[in-house]
Image 1: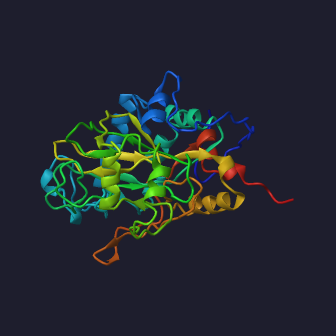
Image 2: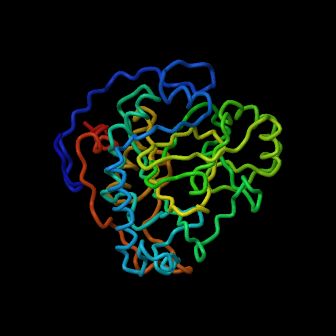
Image 3: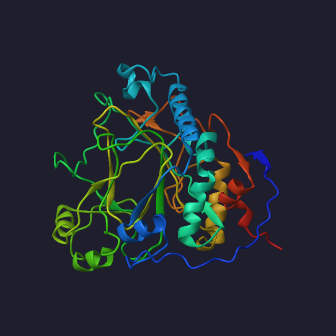
Length: 352
């Protein structure tokens, strides 16, 4: 398959693959014989070895190279260098949002992994997909000087932030989120916490809790669970589960499933790249044009692949633009035919 740098558009044939029926994700019994049965039942699934271990190890190494490449003093072999001043700006949830990181070559290489893309194609019954320009996540095991992630529902030691990444006014299965795990992620290594089965009773929850004051959010596509909401989930038999994974595993979950992340308490850093795909048929031409502009400017988006919200590459450090902010990635992506399609650009209709 031919490849090209992101600066040059490859010749792409858009075949218009006939979509099959997408999964309903309503909890009804299924018999796919693969990850889709767990996904339908629990609202999440782990796809083992979606990326071979050797490539996952390579991506983890590139992630660490990226962090060290800022030249601020961080070294992966020296835990004493894990502090905000030696690293790019990382929020308390472990996310790097700026610096063009969402378009780094190694990030795009992960998005283009065939088994990762195929997972979403199977769920949607559609091979014509677009991908989000979502962020990366690093949470260090040695966190003494890093911002606290005050969200531990498992131990109840601090205030939680469980949420759904979907507007309650738009029910049903709309979005499958995902992340590629790059480091060993056992019970003590931080990572994703989910509430299995939450997708099946999401509409019931929002109907019965309609009068509960909502936690303020910057987008309607985010719903935070209050203490009363968390109690409602527990009263209906739902429990929180820490998702464990090995390097190269892909974790996917229905956006309606209550979830959050947890920093490591063990010896392994958490390294993850968020991957979310949707059928291009779900995006409007306006969405695709906006997405094209985001790609050309190397800007990030949320997990929604139709680029409803577009971010910035300017990171703020202590209230001022970080001196290390940049508008382009360190390594420009090299796209092949499949990954160029994932940008959505080939699906933009040309005006007559």
